[in-house]
Length: 317
Figure 1 (cartoon, rainbow, N blue to C red):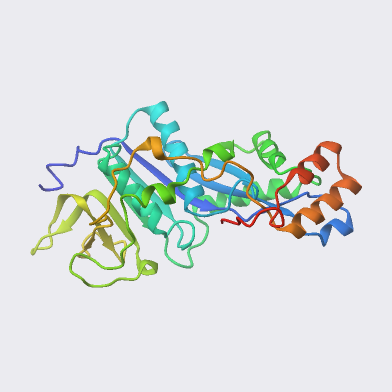
Figure 2: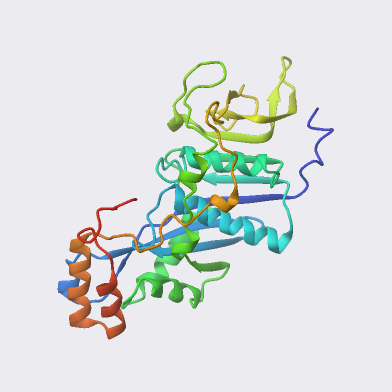
């Protein structure tokens, strides 16, 4: 099928960009002894939605999660569900990310996007990576404004206050979400039932994940011998390219398990943790010391309740 014949096949497209802001330390106070204390970190995953020209900011502290595949996929899925509820089903999804290997250029995100196409949530998905050394992307610009606002705040006692402050800020086109333990699902274990990581295409040639620039799921363009682009349906494979160039001949890879594959059932998708993620023991001690000296009883109770590595040997990132 030619692109001309199928140009109306994806009339409703959703375009997103994902990026993490630098972590926000807590507690934040002006006392000198607090400056040298280790603090609990608050993560901020920004998902910019070009359709709404809005950045969705998902915040959560170290006791809820880190910055790995479970967190990225869970919060992305949360937003996709909200967008579908608000606007109905989209035909195409395009996601731009940076090249962070532990956050976005990661096989579990590839598995998840392949799953969305296979279950029919999207006809086509494109995952594209910004060039190394890129600067001032849309998320970077929004993060710059957010950080300028945060720099004006002199006191933050609890991690969740970062979300409250941002929600009540004068900044426009920002949606703020505080992520909880129940929102972070164990996508890694769940996706392993059906998928396996591969660095080898169907042609048996190996490739390096760090070099990938574009992964295409469902439908994608392929140039014929004359250089004309045709839109092809490839539901069982993923097209990968090492440049953002439609005319580059793509490699084909399948992440599907060949043996011992279990069909994915959403009922088997459970939270990654049912209890707080343990924080570094020294972080808890320093935060509690500062809290007892400068902060409210509510803040003291929060830091005292933190699970730490001394209490549990489970230190999953």
